[in-house]
Image 1 (cartoon, rainbow, N blue to C red):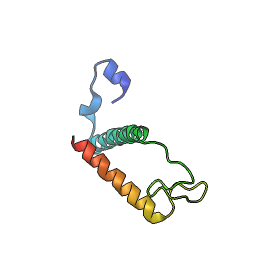
Image 2: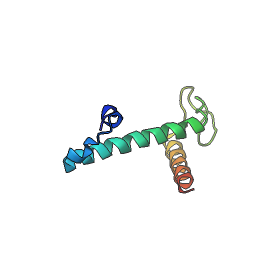
Image 3: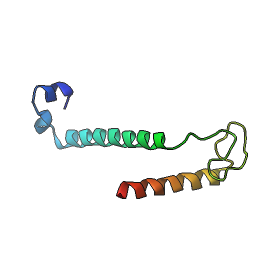
Length: 88
């Protein structure tokens, strides 16, 4: 459904096939997920290159994590926090 259709008051979704409706829903879900991710990223401070975002140890000058384990651990914890906040 385009903005022009909505502006004119016409709902064209009733003419869509089930496959088209699934595609439309997928696009809507993707847009919503991207918006949530942008909002979440805006709330978190930017990572400081050269300092591990997980353990705060010094690492390579342009690195954000000192190793793969720290990256996975940090991302897992952020995911858990996001799920907990979503339940509220």
